[in-house]
Image: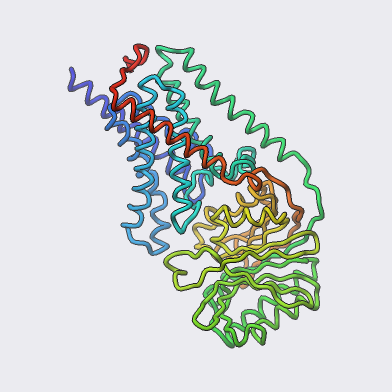
Length: 493
């Protein structure tokens, strides 16, 4: 009888792991279906509450690891070894296992409210530590699975991505807890669900109201250009190849300017420009278009200056000297030889203050927040993606726009040409390979800065999550060491 019961429990756990893994697979991939991750952890969290500590925590970690294999093809495209995948997602699975173990310890000891907070707090703490200590910043945050859930996305204007992740992981913890205690303590189950709904509903109301507020300020007509044609994708060699490519982009820019574009953004690392010819023939074509049309053009280049190699964006303004911005955050291992930049670039545009970042820079919250403090109205972002991650990585920048109150103009090779407002609404978008040899996009966006609490308060939510996690961890350790008994109402579970 005991063997049969144990076997039944293992089969139930295996089913829960499989179900959660499937939901994670489709809810946390390169193009996630956002509702799924709200439910994905529930089956394995129920196992964690009803099974042994080892079975419960390992079920949560295993489900997360299996579901993460949705990103295996992406790692293959990047050319990363299997050990990198195992290291990154093994660590993520370990975090989930530990969060589930702490959640289980607290809930089963009767510290239900601490358990509810412990699960999301542990996950947010891990995301924040990873953001501070790795070269990938916020990439991989669960918050990005919710980019299409616009009412929730507005929470980022108050908390950054950390509040979005917290709510996203609080909900399944509350649902699993309510199911666990519901049979013997139905009133407690109702209180748990009511508390969760009581937090979520005001957040969504706030988001809906924020989305409904009309956008004020002058609209700017902007143009975006990219070419995914074979010889144009790779960074052009210095000299004749660079002059050819810039001349072709200049022709497309002239056409967009003739249609009213006052700002035009091109992708990153289009061509190689040396210190000797930075202000000479290589850039003459784009500067000439700016002078003749009155448009501002932002183009990415690989700039060679002595022993330093910069991933640089050059801003060509009408009848003025070019401005330069050097990328801060390099993509390892591809950009390891490049020299990181150290300063921002904000300048006065026709309708407000414009700024520049390059591609991976927008995976990090701190740099964009400094622009938000400068009342930036429009962020101009050259980029270069990897085709299959055009949605996953390309749209991370949309959250920075919401957090910091600026419009987004992002042009990427092997990605999207994207125009978004400071509420995270994608106003216009097309694939960079939609037409050959050049794809262009023309659209308008409000260039006025929208003040946000996140710009003012920074990562307060992440710090609070860290404090809550430490407090819950201390309580969990005390329970484990003291051998605190399980309340009678929970013993059958």
